[in-house]
Image 1 (tube, helix red, strand yellow):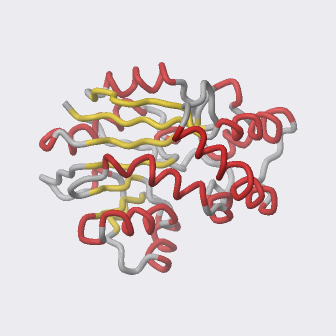
Image 2 (image 1 turned 60 degrees about the horizontal axis):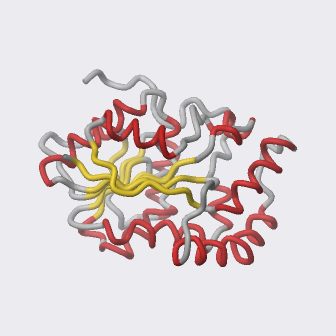
Amino acid sequence: MKEFTLEPNSAATTEEFEFSALREARYYPLAIVREFMPYLSGHVLEVGAGIGQMSKLFVEAVGGNNFTAVEPDAKFAKQFREECPGIRLVEGTVSNLPGGTSCSTIVSVNVIEHIEDHVEELARYHALLSPKKGNLCILAPARPEIYSPLDKDFGHFRRYTRRTMKEALTEAGFAPEKIFYFNFPGYFAWLLNFKLMQSRSFNPTMVRFYDRFIFRYAHCLESEWCRPCIGQSIVAIARAR
């Protein structure tokens, strides 16, 4: 495979990125870990770890000895080391991992949408997972009809549907096991604030309110009773064949 010349995040036109919203959320990141938890086994590799906000939670779930983070952006990697000094970090892409590296699980939270040739990137994950027939756990933005100016600012090439996610995973060699929409009320919040009103930033107060009083309870219904027909994000679980 050819080397990537475009790293995740390099198409973004804002330094804010998604981290500001995640910083204000308490229940949202925990919900992501809970969705992935049944599939976290063996050595876990987080691709596109950013500044380590999700990494801390994954380490709590699987232990530091079973976890490696990968982050290509030098600024984010520097901040990661400052905020997560005890967590193993490889600065670069999966191409920079030592030869012969394999893992049992790869987690990817809001990363794959930043990569133009996402199928080739997924194929790289497959190569790492295939020796152990491991799991790939992805969370990515969903529903192209709500693609907004903020998506473009963040460097998003696309938002996914269940069909387009399944097609990309299958083409890369994976066997999709679960693909479902995540964060039903967030779909309408994104549609209103960022698609229709074309806001270009997050309101910290509104993010906190949404996380604690809307998302918290909505996700309980989604995960325990019925997966929604649409959502602000999509979760995909796939196994390397």
